[in-house]
Amino acid sequence: MSHNTISLNQQRQPLDHLDSVWLFGYGSLIYKTDFDYLAAKPACIYGWERRFWQGSHDHRGTPEAPGRVLTLIEAVGARCAGMAYQVTPATFKHLDHREKNGYLRIFTPLHWLNETGEVQGVVYVASADNEAYLGPDTDAAIAAHIARSHGPSGPNSEYVLQLAQALRDMNQQDEHVFAIERELLKL
Ligand code: SIN
Image (cartoon, rainbow, N blue to C red; front, side, top):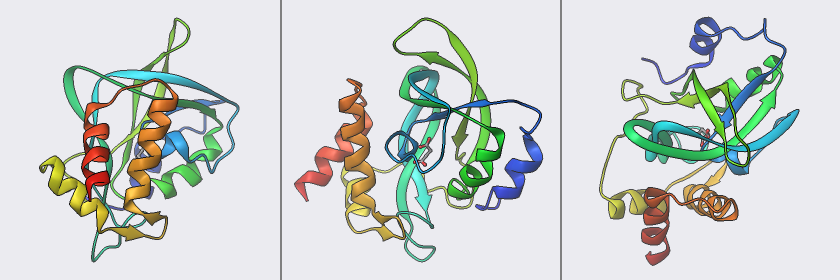
C-alpha cells in the first residue's frame, strides 16, 4: 500500500452524509489541534496500544531520513487514552492531508473518560503494510532515532515530549511513551 493515503481514505470511507463525526486522537492530535471542532472530550479505546513504529516523511522527518511517530497496534486487553473531537465531515479534507503518511481511517467505539457512555468514532491507524511503516525496535534505538530526526513540523523529540506532557496533564499513563521519553532525556 502506498504511503500517501489521501485518496484511499476518501474512497473507502466517505463521511459527507453525516452531520458530524467524532475523531479520536492518540498522538499529535492530542496536543496539536490545527482544525476547528464542535466539542472535545477525553476518551479511550480498547484493544489498541500506541507504538512509535510508523515512519514520518512529512512532519518529523523527510523521505530520505524518516522520523518515528505513533501508530496503533491491536493488543488484546489494551487500553489507549486520548482526546476525542466532534468535527464536521468537511474537516477531514484537512485531517486526511495531515495524516496522509500511511494512516487509514477506521471506525471504532470511543469510551468517555469522565462520563459513562460510548460513541462510534474515527481513528487514523498506520498498519504494517504501508510503505512508511518501520516496526518495532528497542526503546533505546527508537529514542536514538527520534533524537536525530527532524522534519517540516519540527524536531521529532518535540513530538514525544509534548505527547508525554499532554498524557500527564490528563492523568494518563502510557508505559511505552514514558519509556521512550526517559531514553530520549538521557541523550
Ligand atoms: C493521532 O494523533 O491520532 C494520529 C497520529 C499522529 O498524528 O500523531
